[in-house]
Every structure is written in structure tokens, then in C-alpha cells.
Length: 162
Image 1 (tube, rainbow, N blue to C red):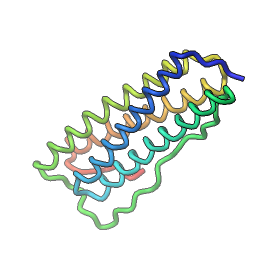
Image 2 (image 1 turned 90 degrees about the vertical axis):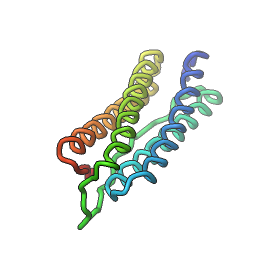
Image 3 (image 1 turned 30 degrees about the vertical axis):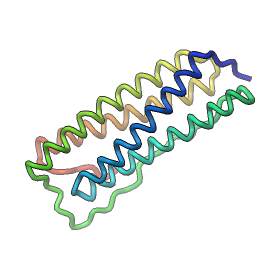
Image 4 (image 1 turned 45 degrees about the vertical axis):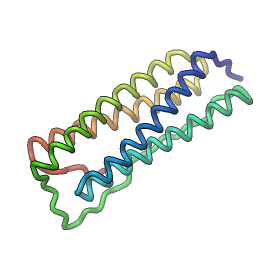
């Protein structure tokens, strides 16, 4: 049975709030872009953040009850189908997309750092594994968003396709 400090429980609650905000941010972003690929990318990120929130809620409940960490298998992106779509982005939309991507990249990096710090605060191997997996996923999201930022600004188009 895991012993969990108040600081870890507080960090989990803070992470839940951040995941909820991230989900809402990505859902809003999906509605702001015209491209099917952009919409799918942001919607999948919104779904990931909801999944992170859900696993943290299960973890919080488990730690408060049995005192046990829960297993987290992780998530992966689904393929994107945008056959025949014009992937180029106009200058007016590019500015809005760049603002979204810049904010999202910063948020994903902060989330990854927060999960890495949580992994270092717990002794339970299952807890360490869970928080490391969450940190890795947030880092992966940041890399995808950075790639899109680069491609949009240097190629003028979405290139993401999972």
C-alpha cells in the first residue's frame, strides 16, 4: 500500500485542474481552425487531456481509499484521414494557429515537467511509472506541436497525420 503525502495529493489536484483547462483549450482550438488535420490534431489532444484527467481522478480516489496507485497504459494517436484536403494555410489563419501552437507547446512542456517532478516525489514504483508515462506523453505532444509550428511557418501547411 502506498503512502501519499499531502504535497503529492495537492499536486494531483493541480494537475487535474491543468488537464481540464488543456482539454478546453484544445477543444476550442479545434473549432478555430479550418483544416481537417488541424481539427483532428486538436480534438485528439483534447481527448488525451480528458484521459489524463480521468486517470488522475481514479488515482486520487484510489490513493484516498486503498492507498494504491493505479495502472496507466497510456494513449496513442489515431490515424488522420484528410484525403483530398487542401493543407495550405492562409496568412490570416496562420497568425491564429501560431498563437494556439505557441501557447500549447508551452503548456505541454510545463505539464511534462510537473509530471516529472511528481515521479520524483513518490516512492511507489507504480506511481513513478505512471507519472513518467504522463510526462513522456506531454513531451510527445509538445514535439508534435513544435513540428507543426515549424511546418506551418516554413512550408505553409499542416503535415501532421499521426
